[in-house]
Image (cartoon, rainbow, N blue to C red; front, side):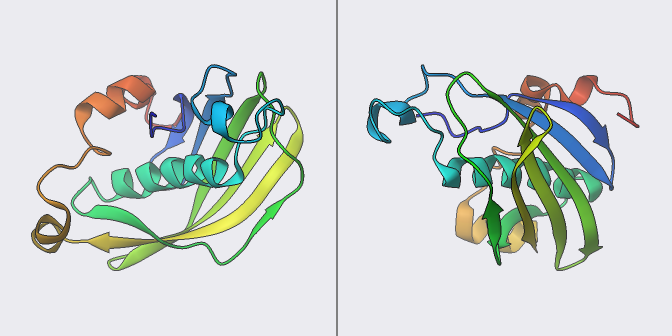
Length: 158
């Protein structure tokens, strides 16, 4: 199963906000196991897409000097399910950005309909400490991932 839950960025304002999309396809692995015959995207995967959008935004704001890890989601309000064939739009806005981490306001919607609203807290791990915990590989912030998501093709203000 793939673990990238955004397809591409559609807007990116460094240090401020990012918007990404996820086309929900019936061909995705999770639909075989999650409610067979009722193709809804699992809520944790929607949260993961929001976390990836916000995490890349936070990482880029600090020039990817540290690893960014999801620290806490205090609550999330889900307003309806997301079905195969729909396109999710993720939006993340940085509320606070400090040396130890960041707070990001996130929302997801389909068309003009809000699907989920949440705030996500991220922690920064310096490279020396994170290397001891996670190793040297930093998949999220490699140039290949940024190219794949189209981040490198966006202008600085979106």
